[in-house]
Each structure stands twice: as structure tokens, then as C-alpha cells.
Image (cartoon, rainbow, N blue to C red; front, side, top):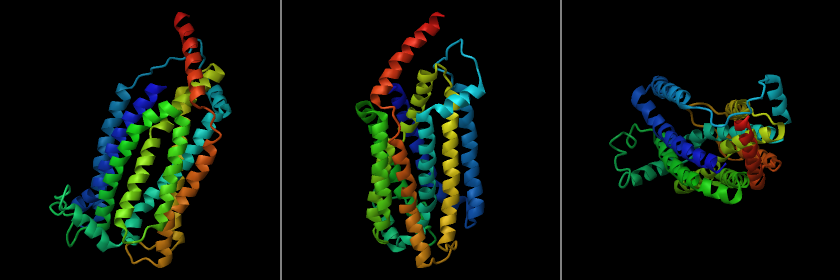
Length: 342
């Protein structure tokens, strides 16, 4: 179980590096390839990312193999697998947590760019970018991120996200030792509470407070980074719990079922993000009314936070703590020794 936390920490360091590439460079790529035609720019940019994704999906499939073998006497039964799944309380809880967590992420991440574009002060963002251009990011003017035709809001969004993802990597590094000390469940819960609190505080940021926006985004991504590897390692614990209780291992359906929760959460969150913008009278590429701006602010902070708070409340019913993890690990190891002898 410690190895799982370690492996998922390594995985999410690379996930975060990929996120830096997507969030940090997607909009500049769109502007570069589109040359004023954003539809064309998005087509080319997404085409490049999709081609890379297909390659890496094949690599992942080809190089993956099963590590934990089930009882050789176990009979495959989809009906029994689904029955075991629905009776598995930790699985049901994680399924609900994933739905609510990804509703939170989908709403917040969908609206955050609008927060930069329509709420934060353009001149303040330009001053922020010009300040960076004299130091570490001294190349910004050379690649068109500062200038008369530059997308200031999009570029500020990209740069702040790069800093945020670097903070997330630091949080991921701390995730493993914290989980080893306090248990995955408790660290996951605490980091989510901190993340949702910081996300909600975005409602109080003034339009010109770009440095405060950066600070909050750093804190949010750091605390979220601590949480990132843990639910995926907890999924494997849920698979162990099912085997421990039912004497049947069904890892694939445990993972696949929870991933359905992730997809459902993204779908609901994405739909809600669009509905919220429409509800408050958002009009694309226009000066927004005060009501629409308030809707953007609430959709970046308070509204997604409500869903995550419900998810945190559900997580209080998850009973696989550190002691239970160790007990399951030892008892399952003893059982598997008998499999190898039979």
C-alpha cells in the first residue's frame, strides 16, 4: 500500500507536467496556429494533443501487466462482480466523491479563464506580465505574449497556471510521506478542506489584485497537489477491501466503476458551467453586465465549492483508515500465499 502511494505520486508529477504543457501553452498555440482564427487554432492545437494522446494510450496498454493475481479457483461472473460492487460501501463512497470532486473541477476550471478575461483588470495583468518579462520570463515579448495584439488575459492565465502547477508538484511530493504518517483517507480529507476553502476565497479578490490571485492559485494548487495521488491509491484499497470482504478479486470493475463517476462528474460539471454562464446573462466576446461578471465570480468560487463540501461530507463515512489498510494488507498477503501453494 505504501508502494501505491509512491507510484501514484510519481504518476501525478508527470500528470502535472502534462497539465503545465496544456494549460500553459494551449492558448499561445491557438493564437499562433490560428493567426486570428481561434476555431482553426483550436483545431490544430487539439489535433496535436490528440495525436500524442493516442500514442501514449498504446504505450500504456502494451506495457501494463497484472501484478496481483486472484484466487485460481475464482469464477468470473459479471453479475456477482456488480453485486459485490454495490455492497462495497467504500466503493459507493468513492464513486460519489469522484462525481462531486470532478463537478467541482469541471465548473471551476471551465470558468477560470472567463474570470481572467472578464473580471480581472487588463492593465494590472499587463503590468504583471511586464514585470515577469524583465526576469525569469524575459522572453515573453519575443513570443508575442506582450504587445498590442497579445491576449493579455489568456497569457496571464497561462503564466499563473504554470506557477500553480509547479506548486502542485511540491504538494504531490509531500503527499506520500503525509499519507504514510497519517493515512490516505485523513490526508485526502484535510487537503480537500484546505483546497475548497482557498477556492471559495476567490470571490473576495479585487479586479486589480493580480498578485493575490497568483498567491491564492499557488495555495490552491499546492493543497490540491497533496490530494491528487490519494484517491487513485484509495481506489486500489477499495479493490483490496472487496477481496478482503468477499473473497473475490475484481480490480478492473472497481476501478472502471469509479472512473465512470469521474466521467459523470466532468459531464455534469461542464454542463453546469455553461448553464451558469447562460443564467447570469453571459454574452461571448462582449462587455459583460455586472450580473454576468458576478455569475463568473460565483462560478469560479462559491458554486463549485458547494459540490466539493458535499464530497468532503460524504468522505467522513469512508472507513478504510490507516489501521484498516494494514490489517487488510496482512490478511490478504496470507491468503495469497495459499493461492500459490494450491
